[in-house]
Image (tube, rainbow, N blue to C red):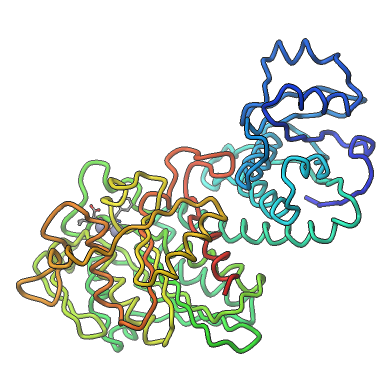
Length: 494
Ligand code: BES
Ligand code: ZN
Ligand code: ZN
C-alpha cells in the first residue's frame, strides 16, 4: 500500500473512502458535518443508527461518491495516545471487511483532537499495521485482507516531513511487534530452537551492525551450561543457544543485554502438565520472540547502545533421558540447582542465559520470560510483572511501558521470601517451598545468578505474551509481541 501526502482538501481527491475521528459529543459531530457541507440532512440517519461517537462505533454516508466514515473515539475531550492506536486499528479492521481501493485521513482534523503531530504519526502507524495483523498461515480459507493500494493523508506542507518521519518510526515499532507475534503464533512443531536460530541468522544477515553466534550442544557443554543442558535432555529437537550482538555506528560505553526465555514447547517434562495446562505452551518462547522482534528493527532505529540478544532455546519434554525431580544440575557459574519440579524449567535455562549475558560484561540486563502461572494469578492475563534491582531501571522501564500503553506492574524482590528457595542438597531449589508468591520466588531465584554491580530487570510476561481474545482494536487474539515497543522506546532513550 502506497502512502501519499497532500495539502489539498481530502474530499476533493477522488478517494473511495475518508475516515474522520469524532468524539462522543453531539455538538462536535454536528459541526464536523456542517464543515463537510452536510447541514442537518444526516440528523435522521444519526438518530436511526443511534450513533453517538462512542469508542469503536462507526457511522458511514456518501458525499459526492466518496464514502465518509466517522469513527467514534469516546467521551474524553482530547484523545490519548492509545486512542489514536485504537482509531487507526479500527480503520485497518474496517478496511479488511470492506473492499476499498483508496482511502484518506484528514490529519488536520485529527490534530484538532490530538495536537502532538509526532506522537500522532507514530501511534497512527502502530495502530494501523498492528490492527491489520492476522495469523492465517494455516487456514485454507484466508482471513480478509486490506485491499487498498493507496492511503492519502491530507496535511499542510510544513508538517509533512515530521509526520512522515514518525510514521516510519511507528511502522518499525509495528514490524518488530509483528515478527514477535508471528513467532509466538507458529506451532511448536515448526517453531523449534532451530527455527528460532534461523530467524536470528536471518535478522543478522539483513543488518551489517548485527552479528550472530549460534552455539550447538557441544559448544554449550564446553561452556558448562549444565542447567540449560539438563532442561534440554528430554527433547529430540537439537538445542540452539542464540547470541545476537548489535554494535552501533558510534562507539558507546553502554552495554545492554536482552535475555529471552526460549522454551519452544513446555510439556512440563516428567512433571507433565495436566488438563489443558499444556494447550498453549507453544507460547513459552514469548520472551525470545520479543528479543528477536526488537533486533529485527533496532538497527533501523539507530539505537545508540551496544545491545546483546541472548536466548537459550530448547524444548521441555519427558523421556527416558529427561531430567528427574530430585536431580541436581550446575550452571556455568558453578552454582548448583536442585530440580524439585521439572515444570519450573524456564528459570533453570535462564540461570545459564543470565550467566552468559554477564560474561559479555554488560552493565544492564533485561530478561523477559513467560515464567510463572502464578504471575497470571497475581496480575491477571494483561499485566506483566516487573522486578528490578535498581530503582532507576524500574522507573525508566515503567515510563517506556506507559508511553506505549503496555501494562507492566512493579513487584517486590522481597528479601524475606528468599529462604523459600533454599535447598537441602544444592545451592538453590527451582521450586519454592510455599505456593504463595510464585512469581516473586521465581524472580528471586533468577536474582541469585546476578552479580551485584549489574543493573537487572526481569519481566514475567506469562499473561500478556498471548491474548486469548482481542484486547483492543490493534491487539487481536494470539501472540501479542508484548514489550517490543516498550523496549524499543527504552533503548532509544539510551
Ligand atoms: N511456562 C510455564 C509458565 C506459564 C504458565 C506461562 C501459563 C504461560 C502461561 C512455566 O514453565 C511453568 O510451568 N511454571 C509452573 C511453575 C511451577 C511448577 C512452580 C507454573 O506456573 O505452574
Ligand atoms: Zn514449565
Ligand atoms: Zn515454561
